[in-house]
Length: 313
Image (cartoon, rainbow, N blue to C red; front, side):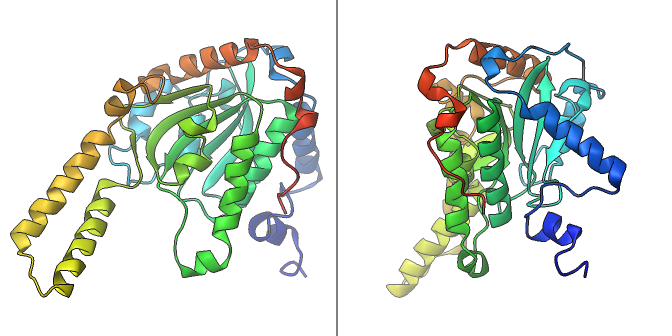
């Protein structure tokens, strides 16, 4: 019976439920957390809580971050060093686990966080769309922590409709009317940049860390794709491509992507609002939230007048 409609199935596989309680006491605790964030209407009128420092020193971020964007990073370790008291009320923690969503406070201000914990799958996208809509209805500002290589590709995932599920998340992000802030903490590649509120999607502020890389794809992937296209074209013409020339061609592509994908390259062209020290992130995000919450909101920006419907199912 548990495998046919049980709590674990609907929390981990189908995504029908948002939380899985271990017992009655845990269920009541979860209910209190939900109610605590359900009455927030407009970020501009929210009474600020008493700020609390994170339980984990922010200086530890240097030890948490990998030097290679291809190395996995548990983004919860980053969140724990940014939010008040390291308290993060995670939404659908067992479903679509490559996207971490939840509510927290930074310097006393409420914030809804979406953070990458791997590549985006259909489940992750549907979860993200649901959470963005929920935060928008509650009037809670959105913070995107980008470390994304893109959406999952392959025949299996195309057949399962990853294009339409990804479109749900992109639509939700584009149409959300609450303030949106973006911090690129690692890679920002391909359509993942769109879903995670890249510059074109109305982020009030967008900052990057020095280790970030932003491009349509990684340099290694681009070099392999372009080399394959050129090699196949030469083979079709009956030509050969010496190994040394091939390596030189691929090295040039890698260098170009490394140069143009560097955060300093983007920041120098005003494609973001600055490259910041990871240790300054909490302070910078708090100041950005302050500015966003001070903006006078038009009547048409009311959450009840959202421009998208319910498409989580």
